[in-house]
Length: 149
Image (cartoon, rainbow, N blue to C red; front, side, top):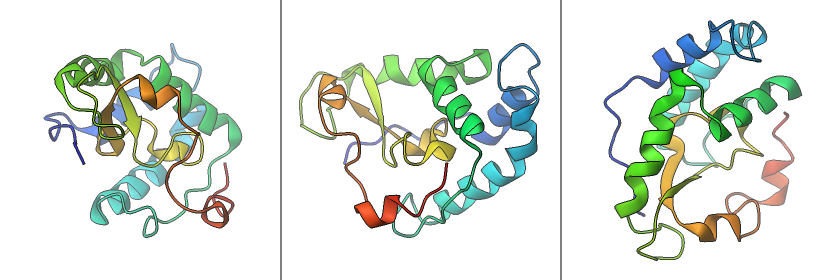
């Protein structure tokens, strides 16, 4: 699978800046979940994003919605997501093999696994087929029912 180059920035530091920004809607609620999100991301990286080995992350619905929203419209502390989208335009789509990139997809989809929405190791280059496929390609229905959001 085509993957993005390992980022030279720190996802956990970006999460700290995001959680401590009083100008965005997730403040201050996100602050209460930073330790949980960091621990989950450490575990995610340790198992290389293997969906069957990643422990479920229980988040309040409001926090899950904020994380998905921050991915969709990244604030300045997550500006690297916009840069990754732009840099993926020259990559081959990991889903269909197209040479047309320009967007990103989540290995563990952001709707089922919002805790990993903004973390770069969960992102892969994609093309417009990303918006034309069913929502979740990973895991089984029984697996996704075990994840609380």
